[in-house]
Length: 84
Ligand SMILES: [Zn+2]
Image (tube, rainbow, N blue to C red; front, side, top):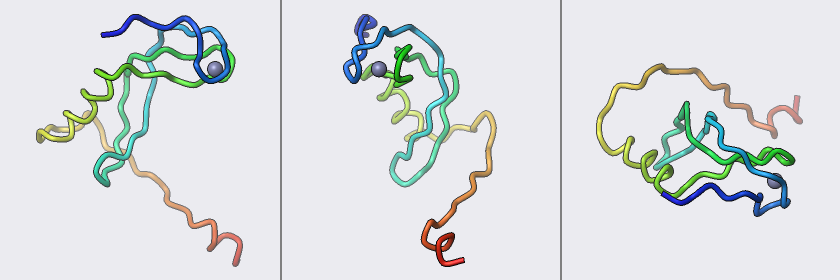
């Protein structure tokens, strides 16, 4: 696991270790991950994830496991909104 980087690669802001919620679509499945360790920029808010964290997310979808909770997500078509 790599050491936390001190500076945001996007804006140069200062990074701090935090636990965040991340939405990812992996192989067509939309999954929300809670309590994800990340280095979060204090300026732009970007959450930087280590490679092993991303791999752990991918691996969690390969084995059948019971999600801690299931959420409903609204899907909205912008084209439909504009036509209305
Ligand atoms: Zn930043």
